[in-house]
Length: 228
Image 1 (cartoon, one colour):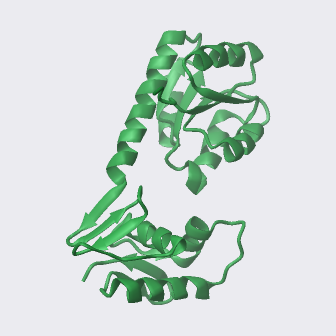
Image 2 (cartoon, rainbow, N blue to C red):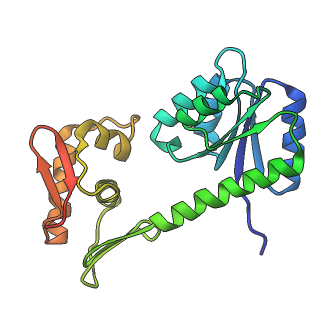
């Protein structure tokens, strides 16, 4: 069975480069979407949900630096692989790019095989990280993010989808306090209007179903995952 290698968004204002990269990556089996500037890149990224973004640094309207900052500010693109394409052979730009969230740099003119190799390497690295994070354990508690299951001492705790997502978020950073607004944005999103009371109700249900102390309320601030 052929393995689908992934989805790539190519962002560059030079049609010839976009065509060249698209042709070579399609031949490798990748599903491709393209954009010609930062504004279109952000819109396409939200619709296409790429596994990796090839992002030109120098573009009109909204350049690569501005674009990556806006993408990284969105929870759904916080961990997306992003590789800068650049004609600038200047260490200062590379350092700045890494600071704002770039994972790699490819210098123009682009060599097809080198491009494919660097993309494959970036995707393998990110997928390995994802696989390692799919299953987390805290003593007798196991949270499996792939199967959407929670077990405590071998017994399954049945949670609704939002309850599971809320528990997974808090457990992703044990001991860290998640603010109420952050929880609302990352679990319910910005397109759904819900009140603070919604979080309280879901937290109470998780505590009841789990039957153990695993979420601590930080009064007036938010919640944190903390096994007693």
